[in-house]
Length: 68
Image (spheres, rainbow, N blue to C red):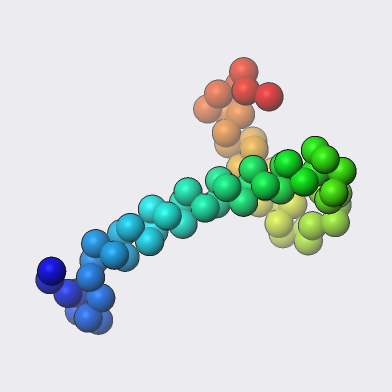
């Protein structure tokens, strides 16, 4: 196992980055579920979080407009 400049395995860094991307979607799905079950209001989220969620939803809809 070759270590990078900082003594960190690049494979571990790559795996962590990929895991982060997957976790982002999990968090989005959890937020959607909480809103759907009326346990959280979208407007309860901070404005920057609302903006990010809306932007991601818009981008996903542009890729697959039939997904509700």
